[in-house]
Image 1 (tube, helix red, strand yellow):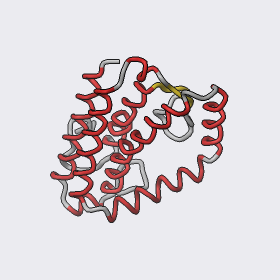
Image 2: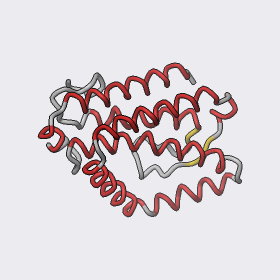
Image 3: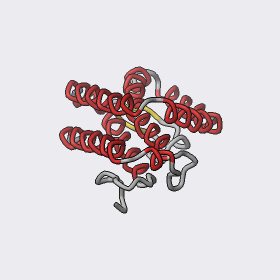
Image 4: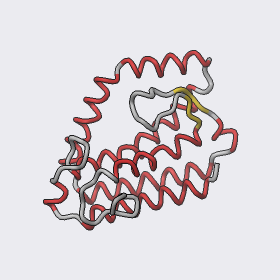
Amino acid sequence: MDEQAVHEEMGRARAEFRRFLDGADVAELRGPSNGTRWNNRQLLFHMLLGYLVVRVLLGLVRVVDRLPAWVSRGFAELLNAVTVPFDWVNYAGARLAGTVVPLGWMVALFDWVVAALDRRLDRETDADLARGMHYPTQWDPFFQDYMTLADVYRFPTQHFDFHARQLTLEHRGRSGAGG
C-alpha cells in the first residue's frame, strides 16, 4: 500500500470539502443533488460520514480479524440481510444531520477526522494493514467481499469522489467530475 498516496487522497478530499462549502450559497446547498434523494448539503454530510465510519471500521477489523473466519463471513451476511433498514437509517441520518449540523462544524469535523485518520495510518504496520474481514457488499458499492485495513483506508475517498460527482454545486472541487 502506498501510504503517502492515501494521505494525499484524503488531503485532497479535505480541501475539496472545504471548497464545496465555501463556494456554495444557501440556495445551492438546498438544491437537489444529481441521482440521490438528498440535497447538496445533506449529500455533503453523507460524504463526511464516510470518513467518520472508517474510524469505527478500523477498530472492528482489529477485533473480527482475530476471530474464526466464519464469524466475519456470518457477520457480513447478517449485515447484508438488514440492508433495507440500514439504507433507511443511512438516508434519514444524513438528511437530518445534513440539515441541522452547522456548516462550520461540518468543515471542522472533516478536518478533524482526516487528521485522525492520517495519524492512525502513520502508526500502522504492514501486518496491521494486512488484517481484514468480510463486508456487507450490499451496503456500499465500494465494499468488497473481503477488505484489509489498507482497503478500508482507501474506502472513504472512493466514496467521497463518487458522491462529489453527484453534487450540483457551481464551484465543485477537482474530483467533482464534470466540473
